Image (tube, rainbow, N blue to C red; front, side, top):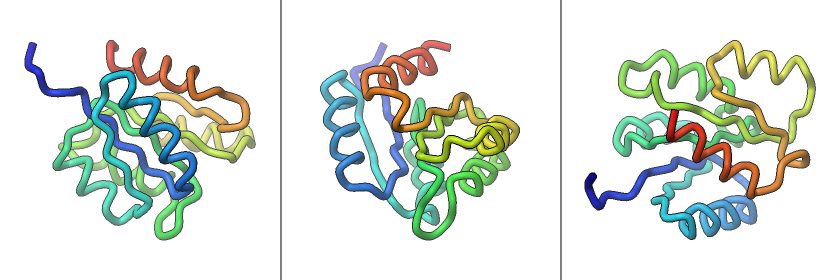
Amino acid sequence: MSDAKTKILLIEDDPMIVEMYKMRLEAEGYEVTATDRGSEAIEIAKKEKPAVVLLDVILPEIDGFTILQNMKAEMETKDIPVLLLTNLGQESDKEKGTNLGAADYFVKSQHTPAEVIQKVKELITK
């Protein structure tokens, strides 16, 4: 096993949430790259090859569903598990995320950071 840290890509536009998850994930020993730009997200994912992507749905340029769809369409990123982490709690949104290939769908208000970290660990060991 190499000394390289497991990479996590966080695509989120709320600086407080970015900071909180970055801190928590880095404390767990992960290397975290964060962006709030949907246009950069795919390129970063291709370059960094993260073990997991945490993806907000509501973003300034391109919504998370579109990013997810694009990731699943690209050879280099299609197998990366994506955890949608959003405020959209509608069943239709969850279905859309799952149908587009999300590994899971977490509504921010319904999950603690500890639960999110636990899910990240599960996705990495799959």
